[in-house]
Length: 107
Image (tube, rainbow, N blue to C red):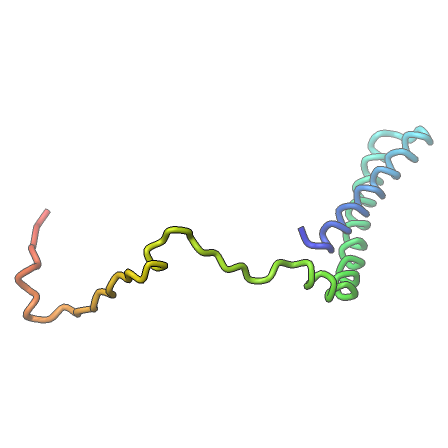
């Protein structure tokens, strides 16, 4: 997951969890508690996403260093290492000389 999505998820979950705890502590009704939790979840997810975008821009150089560069994958014991190469088949378009290889069937 990218950094901005992680930040958004964590901020939203922390905010909604705190909203649930405060709502339970103040003995509000269940519908009001769910409504407030949903609103705080959505709002703080958006705020966390925006903060994550700024954090990605700020830490872009560090993130680029952590990403693995192109990895060269070679298969041990392949035929190419021994020098035996398969010849490339030549493309021959359909022309009047090749019509004898075509069979027609009707269904």
